[in-house]
Length: 152
Image (tube, rainbow, N blue to C red; front, side, top):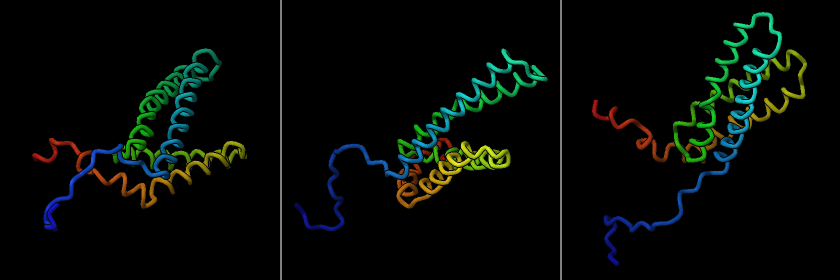
């Protein structure tokens, strides 16, 4: 073994890099939120067809719009669990949207829904901005970029 400090240290092939616990927590929170959003979107579509809405066409349009928006949501926790930077912005947006929805729950005095929604959103925001999560998400930030963008 050489004592030359300019020589690179050998790398050991080991297990995959560990995802920090806060990032795992926010991935779990966003997974639950995405399932809730999908179930709610499906419920809206079914209710708009089988129920008795005042404006059936508008109800169907809203239900389908929610469904289109909810379908890609499970990709967010997947990206976070792989420590991909691509999941950070959608995760933050999901938490901010949850806080916005919780505001209306509080206005309607729906405390049983507002309290867990606020708690999950605050924990999610705190976890995604912890130093460990930031370090894990930005560790390979160049690899997440589009290679075509580097050629411009």
